[in-house]
Image (tube, rainbow, N blue to C red; front, top):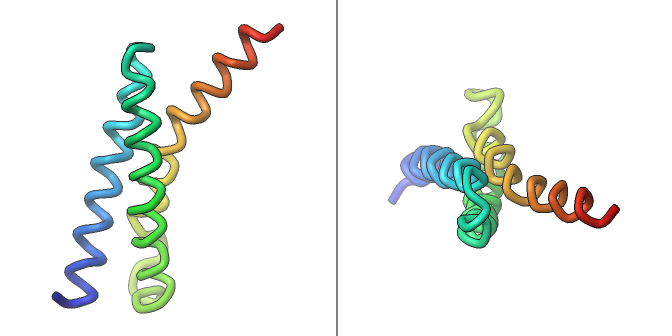
Length: 88
């Protein structure tokens, strides 16, 4: 399997996982699954960003992994907000 194919697959996979993680804050019951998706999204997006930095930094300025990383962080930030809001 070539580096380019892995890079593209992981880019789109990080977007999908990040979108699922971001959609999980719709209901508080899905927050556990959202955190799990967020963790998996961080890993996949990190690998995508690493591959971009190592092989394809001249071709593509912003890889899809950055967007996946932001989307994956939404449930973590949401839980932090809920905890801080109910603490005070």
